[in-house]
Image (cartoon, rainbow, N blue to C red; front, side):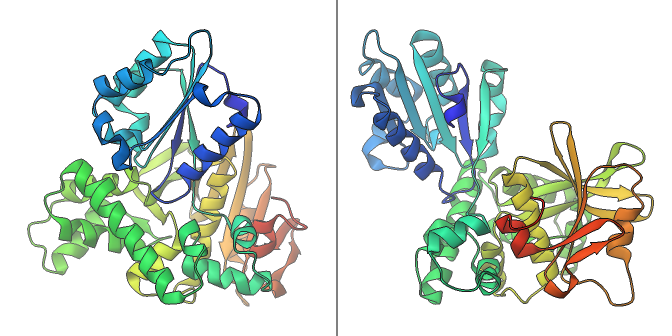
Amino acid sequence: MKKYQDTEFVKVITGVRRSGKTYVLRMFRDYLRDSGILAEQIVFLNFESMKYSSLLTKEALYQYVTDRVVPGKKMYLFFDEIQRVNGWEDAINSFRVDFDVDIYVSGSNASLLSGELATLLTGRMVEIPVYPLSFKEFMAFTQTTKNPDLAFNDYVTEGGFPAVALVDDSEVKRSVLDGIYSSILLRDVNERAAVRNDTLLTQVAAYLLSEIGNPISGNKIAGVLKNDGWSKVGVSSVLRYMQLLSDAFIFYPARRYDLRGKSYLRSTAKYYAVDTGLRNVTLNRNYQDNFGHQIENIVYLELLRRGYRVDVGKYETQEIDFVARRGSEVAYYQVTRQMPAADNREIGNLQVLADNYPKTLITANRMDVGEVAGIPIVHIVDWLLGQDCSI
């Protein structure tokens, strides 16, 4: 966030509940204090706390901040989980217009970036996404002495929520993950959108968790649910729930992109979970279950962390797992548990691409590491840690 300090942009920190947004805001507040900013120049409000329950209207929030503005000084305003304030967009815009302020807000729903805020602040806001711990952060955060390859199995099974990584007991970990998942569904999806059918929402979420890495459509989910006895389920309801789950950052849709036709395909997308730990505790699975798609999920999230926009590529009949774009930079990635003994399709899918953009195959088998036809094959742990490979 330092590069955006004292700019006109409203800094919008987004991410799933319990991913560490509050910690990021507190770290930056402490950095400001250490940099010489006076305590009275900083207003820090966490709207998850009952302490600020009287400030959940735009009028009350505006008055509270106005009363604390120091004349002649720049104010630094931090609002955690701002979406709980009714009409908060108007208050934020008024602070920007009326005072000399640097504004940071966070929320657990993608709606922060749309609707009235987008209208009021066109060109004047910047998103800073926060995700659960990367594997590299997980290793440092847990201070594990395990071999990284073994620690990676723990990471796949338990995921990267900081609250989970902090505890040692496996049953407590499961309980924490259960609590996170329930709070996301109940507070960031159900409460916000007034979902009428909790059970259907849970079924849609469970299906998406079970199908990470597979092409998904609303029609397909509706068909599966009807086969399971949900006779009155419509595609429009399923699509709404899928959008609500994505808005709460439980899932990230990866659109399919036709590399030859230079256009997006409308039929299906792949949905990746924000955390494999949530997937495994909800489905009662571990790292061994569908391991190939779980590591694909981890690579997808890591590319997002590194600032890429990520699509699923299609080139004629071949599928490219990930087409990663960052500015003018483009890179292609295939992800596999191990190289098939009698089939080079993983490398072959990359070889058909005629351009000169970097191509990488990521594997979970150390025996596969090397290079084939000029395409580097790297182990997923090394790639995640940035060791001896292109990151």
